[in-house]
Length: 405
Ligand SMILES: [Zn+2]
Image 1 (cartoon, rainbow, N blue to C red):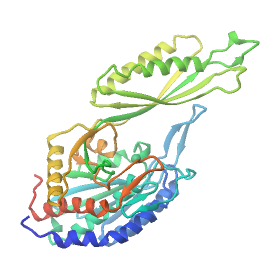
Image 2 (cartoon, rainbow, N blue to C red):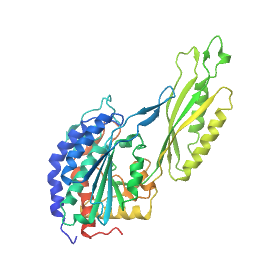
Image 3 (cartoon, protein in one colour):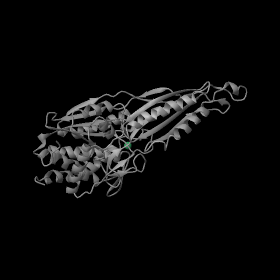
């Protein structure tokens, strides 16, 4: 290394004990995606934590998130605000950093508190996904701001409140950011073995609302049109799409309908998720859905309604993503980390950035695992380690030791 980055890297190391306490505090704030007040409390704390960096701050209201309830109606759930920070928007190299503030653990979920398991392990809601990553961002940017070369890099940070429910409300903010940056860094947790994600599958969430006709099951069964029976056919047809197209998978994850067994049920709500690997999968799937719905509606008295959309396109490797990966891999080697990149079926905001044309690496947060369960953990030693990784990338780009263009 032609420049000595040790002062900034050592500074990160020295912050580890305080950041560990901060991560405990952040994880103890419930910020389930639908708990807007809790998400806003996380945002308020982040504003305080990032204040020393003296970036411009914007709090952005997002539209409510719409979901289908068990009656088949669309209901709107308010979500928290997004927080956007911008620093040196006129600097030669513009870098975008993002992390979500919400978790999958709602206000009434039993998993509410973080605890230290051992010297290197923290267990708690969001410790890895993604609150640890928020502090990785803080440390990496703070290290850049301590560099004499910081003026070469301008940065924008986006904290969104709705990643775990598909980022529908914050998607325009990502598309917008993609137009004014060279590349993106997203702070989802790394794989449990410390390695990083390359290609990611795309994802869509859909609902089918099946309506029939209610009738007395004993006196007038001939007048009824059983919505559960029609939904069962739809579920079987949807599941049969698995294996029909390479790397496309479909999971029916929710079915709700019926009531007392002496009533022919008139309503059933079916929800499913689809994972895609190339953009053309989306058209193919829509053609299949049209066919399945048309078939089911051939039965007199049965009506179906489809709602939903693909919220994340597949993230396909491009030369610029590979270039960014190789720069990060090189920074890792300088820090003694052997990082490998591999594809995953999981998706995140990195998908949306890539779809909008912004190359990015998207799991630069802490090392952890068992996310979305009450066994979620993160490795405490990875907080300074991953902060040093992103910091070194930024420091080397700022000094000119690495060049993006
Ligand atoms: Zn998650």
